[in-house]
Image (cartoon, rainbow, N blue to C red; front, top):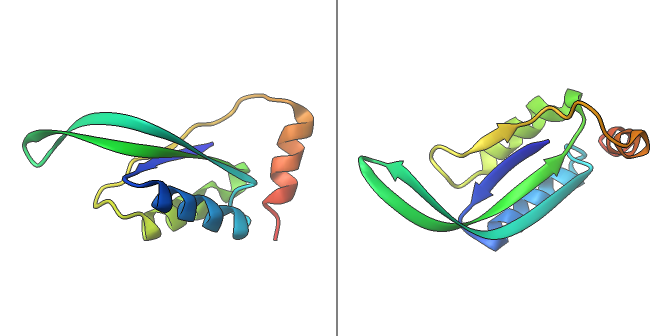
Amino acid sequence: MVTTVVDSRAVADVLAAAAVAGRLAACAQVGGQVDSTYWWRSAVETSTEWSVRFKTASDRVAALVAQIRATHPYEVPEILVTRVESGNPDYTAWVYEQTRA
């Protein structure tokens, strides 16, 4: 699973659709709004963001991360990869099948 956050719902929708259309993710879920507080350029910032969670196969992670980095609007985007140790075998098989070209 790969997650990121962006500053608008429209951008989140574009990232989600591009990953699924490109078979880099079987599914992408857009969630939000969430308020984030963080350090940026020596100051504490607070902004509203939308999260995107991508469901992908392990052999597609690198390509998905590369696509997110290339199209993400942030200078330093949050892109987190979480390894799923187990899950419904039918679902994990579906994710694998949907990420094949």
